[in-house]
Amino acid sequence: MEFEWGMSAGRFAKAGAGRIPLSVLLSVLQITGFFRGERMASGELKYQSGFGNEFATEAVKGALPAGQSAPQRTKLGLYTEQMSGTAFTAPRAVNRRTWTYRIRPSVTHKPYEPYKGEAKSLLRSGPFTEEPTPPNQMRWDPVPLPKKRTDFVDGLITLGGNGDPAMQAGVAIHIYAANASMEGRFFYNADGEMLIVPQEGSLALATELGVLGVAPGEIAVVPRGVKFKVEVGGGVRGYICENYGMAFRLPELGPIGANGLANARDFLAPVAAFEDVDGKFRIVGKFLGKLWEAEIDHSPLDVVAWHGNYAPYKYDLKNFNCINTVSFDHPDPSIFTVLTAPTAVAGTANVDFVIFPPRWMVAEHTFRPPWFHRNMMNEFMGLVFGQYDAKAEGFVPGGASLHNCMSGHGPDAETWERASEAELKPVYLKDTLAFMFETQLAVRPTKFALETKILQHEYYECWQGLKNNFRAAKK
Image (tube, rainbow, N blue to C red; front, side, top):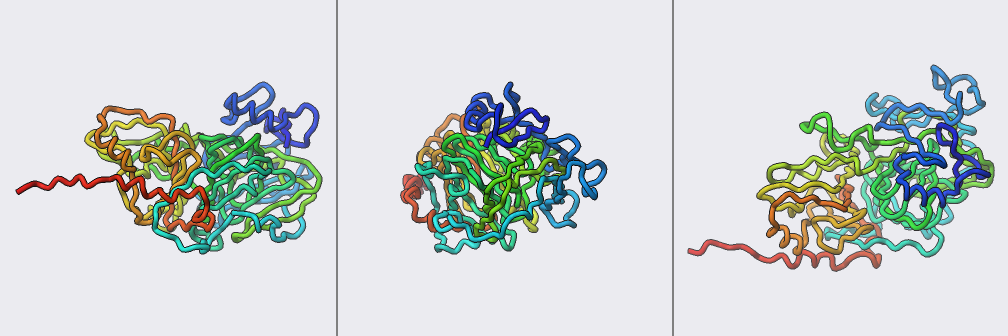
C-alpha cells in the first residue's frame, strides 16, 4: 500500500506519482517519532483525541451530511451505512455507533466460504477444549520471527483463552509474528475487539475509518467488526488480547479522584481516509471461532467520511500517570490498569489491561517487588522491553507467562534474596515495560502452547532455591 497525503484528513488512495512507499514511510516514521502524530515535511498522520468521543471527520469536503445522519441522497453519491458496537438501547454513556459514508456498502461481496489456510493456522477460539488445563505456572520464550513470507493474519498464534465468543464472554490471547504486509486481502473480527501490543517492529493499521501508526510502547484497539489490513516494513512481533465481552473502557478512579492513570485526552482515533480501488480482493473474517473468506471486487476501506464514537484508537503508554505508595506496603496492581472490560459483577473484569512502566519505588519497610500471591483472577504477562522487577532472568522481551487461578507465584529466588537485603532508598525503575491481561476466568492453553519448543519446562526451578529461613525461638 502507498499513501497519498495532502488532504487535511490524511487521505490514502491508489498508488501513483508523488506518493510515499510504506517501506520508506515506516523507516522514516520510526526515526522521527512520526508514529505519535508528529508532523514531517513529506506528509502527516493526523489523529483526533479523546477516549470514546463523538468524532466527525471527512476526507473530502462535503462528504458529511449536515444536520442529519441518513439523507435521502448524499451530496457526493456515497452510501450511508451505520456500524453499531452495542445494542441500540444500551445506556448513552456506553452506547457505541458510527455512521459511515462510503463508496460502496459492505454487502457488496460474494458469499463467505471456509478459509483455505485454516488447516495451517494456529489461531484458535473459545471454548478452549483442545487439552486439559494443568494448574502449573507456565512461561514461554519469544516466538521466532518467520522465515517464510507471513502476513498478520497467517502470523496469528493462540496461546490460550477462556469463555466463548458465541456467549460474548471471555478472551483469547494471541501472539503475532509476521514479516510481510497484507496484500490483496483484509481482515475483520466479529467475535471480539482486538487490543494489539507491539513488541518488535511498527505496524500501520489501515482501517475502514482511517490509519493508525503503532510502535512498540504503544497499543491499538480495533473494535469488533471493523475491517483493516496491516502494513509492515520488516519483521514484527507482539501480543493480542481478543476481548469477547463488553468493550474496553477507562477504569473508574474512585478515591484517586478526577485525574491519574490513563487520561482520556491521550487516546487517539484516526481521521477519515479511504481507498478507491477496484480489483480482485478477499476479506477474511473471524466469526464464531472460525475463519471465513469472501471475494470482493474493490477495497472495503472506502469510507470517505464518518461521524460517531465507535472507532479504532491508539494510546502511547508513556502517557500513563502511575499512582503508587509514598509510605509503606504495596497497593494492589489494579492501580496500573489502563483499560478494563467489565462484567455484570461489580468490580470483576472480563479482562483488565495492566502495565508496569518506568516509575519511582519509594516504599519504606517494604519488600518492593511483587509479593508472593495466589489470585482468584488469572494472569497472563508479557514483556515489551527491559527487565521485569520480579524475575531476574528467563522472562525476556517477547516472552510470556501464565499464572492461573490459585496457582502460587511471585519473585524468583534470586530476586527475593536481592530485594530482601536491598537498601530502601528511592529507586527509579527505568527502561522497562511489562503488561498483564488479567481475566476472571482461567486461561486454558492451546495444544500449541503446551507442546511448543518455546515452552520453558524448567520454569518451576526459579522458585526451588527459596530456603527455609524460619528462626524459631529456642526454649
